[in-house]
Amino acid sequence: MTEETQAAVADDDFGTPEIDAVKAIEVRALTKRYPGVVALDHADVTVPGGSILGLLGKNGAGKSTLIKVLAGVTQPDEGEILVDGEAVHIHSPHDAAALGFAFVHQEMADVPNLSVAENIGLGLGYPKVGGLVKRRELRNWARAVLDRLEAPIDPRATLSSLSVAERRLVMIARGLAANARLFVLDEPTASLTEDEIDHLHKVLRTLRDHGVAVVYVSHRLDEIFAITDRVTVMRDGQTVYTDDTKNLDKAAMIAQITGSAARPEQRQRHIMAGDASELLRVEGFSSPGVVEDAGFTLRKGELLGVAGLVGAGRTELMRLIFGADHAASGKVFIRGEEVAIKSPRDAMRAGMALLPEDRKGQGAVLDFSVRKNITLTNMSKFRLAKGVPLPVERRERSTTRDLVQRLKIKVANSEHPTRFLSGGNQQKVVLAKWLGSNADIFIFDEPTHGIDVEGKEEIYDLMSELAASGKGVIFISSEFTELVGACNRVLVMRDGRLVSELEGDAITDAALVELCYSH
Ligand SMILES: Nc1ncnc2c1ncn2[C@@H]1O[C@H](COP(=O)(O)OP(=O)(O)OP(=O)(O)O)[C@@H](O)[C@H]1O
Image (cartoon, rainbow, N blue to C red; front, top):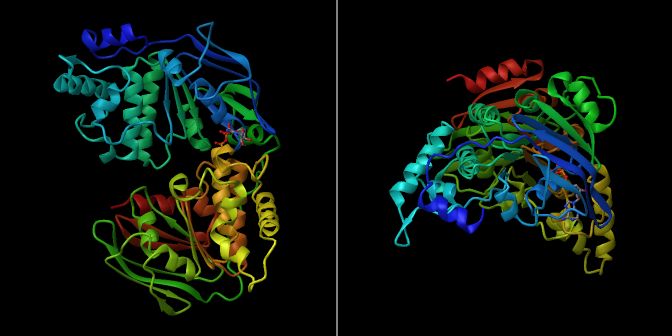
């Protein structure tokens, strides 16, 4: 938006935004090379106005790079972008915004300490008189924008006080306020409840019905079927397949994504073998308003699922046990012996590993190399050899090589910063870091989030292997089907309490839905 139009918006036009239709956004032969990898290889994508396009592909296929080019964050080496048939040039995020492109990212570009209204008006210029922002006018205007999305959010609230779902809606509202013609959403339902996902989808359908173009990136195929009109599949930077979603079934979609025939078999649920002695026992964990009197046991060789809706207290309980948050009460016993865990350091010393849900914030140091990240938790393993100076780097390199292979991490060079990897591959690096540790008890919080279909299977296999080797594995997931497929036992949490437990064949989708939703 030019300064003139900005001023116009600020002075006169601060009315309810209209939704702008677009004929089509097209990407032609887009190519982007990084050292050692072609992230985009003559990619062609067309998003007709009034449609929702699902963008699919394995981790590292090039989806985020395509989005970064559209957002003006990255410059392509070759290719062009057309809006309604006209070539456009996007040199900066400002250019992208001026074209009416809006982005809803997982790492959100909102400003947490500003109000909702200020966030929605950000970059548009606020209504002002004598240099002062007309707060009431801004508020009313923001409320009108939110009303269009049927989002009951108070425009005066500070953004940081909102839930993840509400913040995503505010991002969409900002796009709407800027009359965006293209909305790009990258894994938008992460950490959202079913109801919130339904609402988000409804909002997207409304935008579509007004002629807006929507790009929806997700690894969750159920969502792709639920919300998209068309899909484009990427492989190794190329766009290899485009069709109407209704022409595909799940197996065909997986085949396109992986480039090979889908594996139709049902997963073999983890079966406990050998010594099933108690490894971990947790008693009476409470934290006011979050977790109430939670206790359970984990046996050697177990792959124990924890089901629940977002907000049920699963992550919170694990953080309390791990010493990452302070518990009002609770005892931890490892192999029958009580251990005092006051900090994550105590937990790690006691042989526990927690792979957090928020991996970006808590898992990987993005500026460190892949090797450094993988070997970070195991420094002592590499450094202490009774005073003998070790060829540390060599050992680190070989461990890294093994884990990179085992997890099929797509990385051009393990000495490069982890930032260079695709989102899913960054997550695998965090997994690798913990797998390389000597822990006996592994807690995985939503480990398959953002991981592609094949990678998910690999992670289930890894967890099962860990358990089979005599470790204990706790697997938190919001996707019931993956718990059903993988775990030998599942705990159910609701409203901060452990309310039920299922074992073996009793673990079914229907049983989990019933237990998690019933009140
Ligand atoms: N800044 C960068 N420097 C070097 N390589 C990069 C950079 N950004 C991306 N890549 C590489 O480009 C390729 C495509 O990555 P991209 O992030 O686009 O994948 P993606 O499809 O979004 O994957 P995911 O589903 O895991 O998010 C990957 O091999 C990645 O490592």
